[in-house]
Every structure is written in structure tokens, then in C-alpha cells.
Image 1: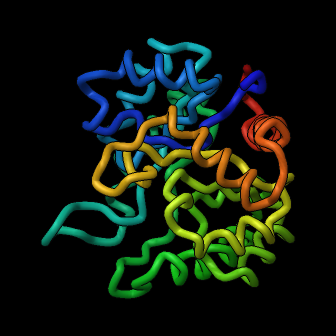
Image 2 (image 1 turned 120 degrees about the vertical axis):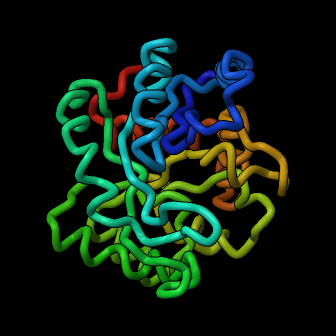
Length: 238
């Protein structure tokens, strides 16, 4: 693959990558990945993504974000303002390093919006209402009508390798113009095999599936999705 690839959404600060990050990065590079957008799910990961961006300068690009669901098991709760307030100064301190804010979302617990589709459908209005002009709706699983709203707002969409085992997303992939699609892995989650750690090298699976569904070459998908990533992340350098 001659065209450079961009993984627009991955969780490289996850515990699953602690033991073999060098190998993970090397496999990603061998797969043609030239940029990894590293998002966080909580403040405890902020320092890690900054360190990764320094260790792999020019390849890993950091984002700060708070996942809409915090805690675990019995303590699972919607994100609260007190989860964010203590770390707001860090956004300013590292403003020059960050390429985006993410991962973010609305404070919908599964009890309020039990499906990914419902959470997607509640998300778009606040984004547009707040005047957010550039956004990536990652792992989008909403209805086609909601996707149209996102397109009208100028947003981009990305799909992880897991779509290769879920043909329900094919309708969305067909509907959304390639000029609004980016590549992602969401690693270590949402890989081609359930219960198996996903990693950035699997971006080629997303690439190949999108090309297959749209009936075009992988070279075209690689070229356009990388252009889209560069438009979306203005601080990205390949």
C-alpha cells in the first residue's frame, strides 16, 4: 500500500498495550499507517498519551477527552462535571500538543439510551447547536436519516474493523460519501475477531471492507480517507 493511512481513533494508552507498544507501533507502520490519533477515556490517561506522542513523535498524535460513561461495574455512571473540572487546566497546558478533543459524548447511561443507535441520534443536535463545525462520529451506528443530518452539518464518519463481521453497517457505508469517511480501529476494542485484542495494523481491514462495499479500489479509499483525515485534523503532519 503506497498511500499513507491514518487511524483516526485508537486507545493506545489502554492497559492492553502496556507490554508491547513498540511491536504494536512497528506492525502499524508495516501496514502503512503514518499517523495514529490517540484518544483518552479519562483524565488518568492524559499523561500517557502525551508521553506516547513524545516517544513516537510524528506518528502518535494526542487528544484529551472524557468518555460519557465513567466508572466500572456497580459504579458505572454518566460523566459528571466533577469528573472534568479538576483536569480542565491540563487542556490549556498541553493545548499546543493536542490535535483534537476526544473521546467525548453526551452523558447517556445505557439506562437512558440503551443502544448505540439511540445515543448517536441524541448527539447531533447539541453538536450543531453548540456550533461545532468539525467532528468525527466514530463507530457510527445510527439510522441513515441521522447520518444525513451529520453530513449536512459537515461531519465525518469512521468505521472500525468490526464492521467486517457486521453487514448491518454496509447500508451506512454505501450511503455516506467517501469524501466524508475516515479510517479508525478503536483498538484495542472492535477488532475483526471478538474477544481478541484489536490493534492499529488492522486498519487495513476497515479499508478493504469499505472498498468492497463501495465497489472501488483500496487505493482510492486510502487516498480519499487520508485526505479527509488531514482536513479534519489540521495539526496532523504526515
